[in-house]
Length: 359
Image (tube, rainbow, N blue to C red; front, side):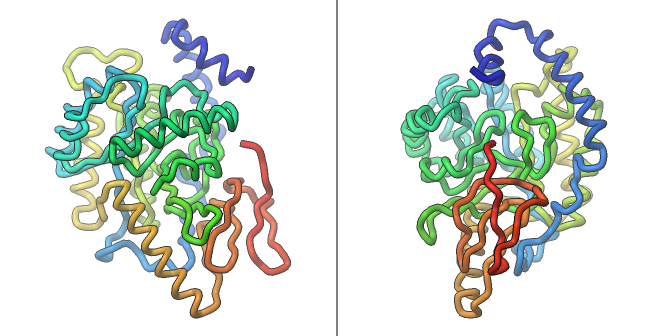
């Protein structure tokens, strides 16, 4: 049994104080170790080959998402979305399918708000990728929830990722990765601030990967105990300068909407409001704000147009280097991520070749 499995088995029986304090110590160490490559990592701003920019000549793209981890988050979700809407924004909300009850009326209300529903695993118990057999067993139920909820996107709990397995879910997009985030239990970032395509066996089989590019709220405000949104603002400014995608994950579970004192595991919801206001005031008219499914649709269509053009020109289709996929003619072959590794070789034909590794 791995340490990760032991952690998730014992977690319900251990007081929060005992779980949280070691995570804070670890986060402080990692913050110092990665002060030169977090929250912005040089090299991740490289544009995809043939990149022509975002629709309507916008400077950067903005995608807001939320993970609802437990019943407390579900209770606070309405207030969070109403706050967001009052600022003129909308988002994708990812729910854990079998951890709490999510009614049809709840999902209908989210759709009426102009938002999107996605699946955030089955139980948030760290066991999704324990083995291929376990994943395949759970994949059957995940596909059922995707269909019943009319969802096209997925995010793995705790940002665990096995991108080559996710083809079994029949997704339009996944968002279980990040450009750089050393605080995650599986910290191998994809080293790009752009979406990219993960190919399957067939020419047009695959899904769009949407990495998050802004630090998570739990990392900033709970683990690192930041008292403001300066890190969010600096990273957003860097993304805007480099014309990437600003994709944010927040958790209503940790937002405190009242005036009462905050607990060790909550932060003021006004931080989120302040960040939305910063986006709108500093970058008014400069960003393309879409839902995750709309971003995935745009990226899929762009890829198809590039593929048709490159069939005629005989050029190879490129992807951001951080994805470490194999580039073969007009498609990106299935391959394991080896993000950001300088050891990825170049074959005799000049195409990228990944060095397989176990995640």
